[in-house]
Length: 94
Image (tube, rainbow, N blue to C red; front, side, top):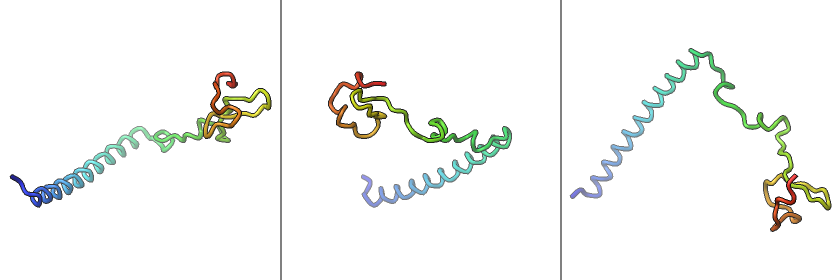
């Protein structure tokens, strides 16, 4: 039967092997990425897109619901206003 201290020693060895493998594979991945980036002349915008660019310049979300009696609107995000709270939202849809 394997003792607790033996298991801890094995875990330390495995932890070190894992760290070494991560470091090695990360370096290999970076090297491969650099080759691809240079080959296809990629730029940051080709790899990473900003979410705010899809929402428009202001970043505002258009309203989804309107209170017919007051004209108040709500985007459907965050806490629901009192005028729609607990009611069927389909009748308030814009």
